[in-house]
Every structure is written in structure tokens, then in C-alpha cells.
Length: 255
Image (cartoon, rainbow, N blue to C red; front, side, top):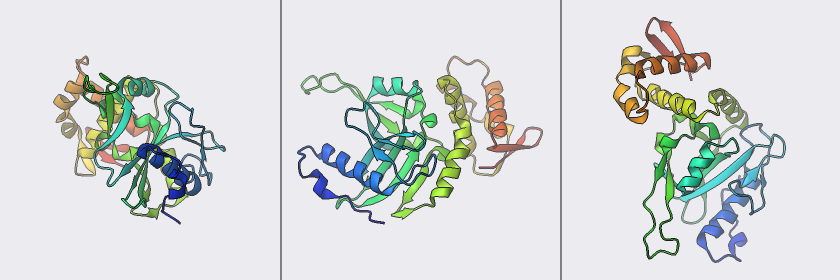
């Protein structure tokens, strides 16, 4: 596989962001399969599409692409804060590819974040642009990449190694069981899953989960019975095959 951007595509562009957009979209179109259905190609969309960059003609999967020079790190810069919040609450929000590349335009990593992992708590509001800026007062946002549960960061390319498409499709199908369009329910499920992930051992207890009560209370200030909500979300994670009950008040991680 060729991990190099085609730099000739950027010759007619002045803006560096436009150059990266054209080169990275072309690279994905020519090298990456659809993580949803395994189709061996996804196609570039017209530039006038509001939030989407790529589409699978086989299953209809829609993708946005964000590219970053160097390591992906903990945060990925996105667009307008208000627009991002609207998208999260919309059923048309696309899945997100996050691509990293080197100084000499070599792709190093590509990660997929399924759309149903997006919740308001991972969107960080940036400071408004200064009054002297061209778009004074405009408020952008960051995607706090590190706050997304590990199940929602599907590695497709890692250190210039492409993973087996069949494994990626299977993993997407597994995590798709977590999909819910209700943003409040999704937030609770992702938050409790993150708590489960942060426990070092495979086996854990309800007591371990109750240690996150204060953390969850700060995120869900209107809920007056956090313990009951934790138990409810653990039941959902069990039903979806991510954990199992081993005894009363005791659990084991499965995926």
C-alpha cells in the first residue's frame, strides 16, 4: 500500500487546509474500505456537502474526514461549536475518520469514530475569536478524542499497518449494538462504559462502579439517583454483550 499523499493534487490550491483536504480525501478514496460493510472503496462527495466528505455506494455509509499533522493526541479541532451540538442531536451526523500524517505527507494512522459515540461531553467549547479577528466572536470546538470510550476508536491504520477489513467490519458491527438516537440515553451509556473501561481489572463490582458517583453527578446534574442509573446502564451493557454478570453485584468485561 502507498501511504503517501499525492501532492500534485494540491498544486492549484493556496490554502494549506484546502491542500490537506484534497490530498487526504483522495488518499482515503483510493486506499480505504468501508468499515460498515467492507466494500473495497468509498467515494469522495461533492465539495458542497455540508458535513460529509465520503460515501460508500454499497451501504450508503457517510463519513467526515479530519486530518492532523503529527500524533492525533487528545484533541481534534472541529468547526463551529453550535453546529457540532446540532449535528450530535441529528440522525444525519456522519461517522468520523481521523487521519494523521507526517511532515512529508505520509499517512501514519487512521481511526474511525462511529457517529453513535458522539455526546456533548466530548465536545469542548473554544474561546470566541477576538474582536479584531475576521470572524470576530465566532466560537469553535474541539473533539476531546481521549474521552471517547476505547470501543469507539476503531483503528484502521496504525503506524502504517492496515488492519484486516473483515476484523474492522466485525468490530463495527459489535459496537453498533450501542447505537441509540436519544442523546440523553447515549450520554449515560457512554459515560458508564467509560467508567467500566477505567477499572483496571477484567472483573469488577458494583462497589467499584459506585466510586464514580460524584463524577457522574457532575455530568448529569438533574439526576437525583445516580446509583440506580448506573445499575440500569450496566444492565444495558450486559444485554448488548459488553459485560456479563458473574454473581450478585459482580461483573466481568467481555469486549
